[in-house]
Length: 116
Ligand code: 5GP
Image (spheres, protein in one colour):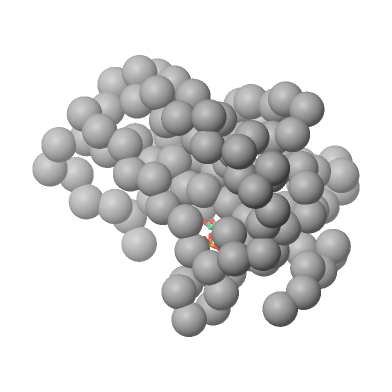
């Protein structure tokens, strides 16, 4: 499958639709999910055009994981969570709905289920 530069996260990267950015560097952006499954649910995405992890090049992935860790640690502390769920979906069969590579960072409080 190919990359469609009209996807929502590409528009967020270009500043065409608003987002609440919580982190940005040369290669990566993190922003809050508009429909959070728990308080503090954030998304980490590469600036590079990658549909998902299946077509991402190794360099893109190498920049991404340290930021996933950084945002996960910051979210855990900021939201006084007991743990953090990191999720990542590839293609519709796996639950992907936005076709720009992203990691979900979801602070978790003991005993609190995710919102649907
Ligand atoms: P996926 O199912 O593709 O892994 O998750 C896509 C995520 O993007 C969902 O959690 C959804 O709430 C989030 N999302 C969809 N549209 C927007 C948007 O316009 N802005 C933000 N910040 N998040 C979005």
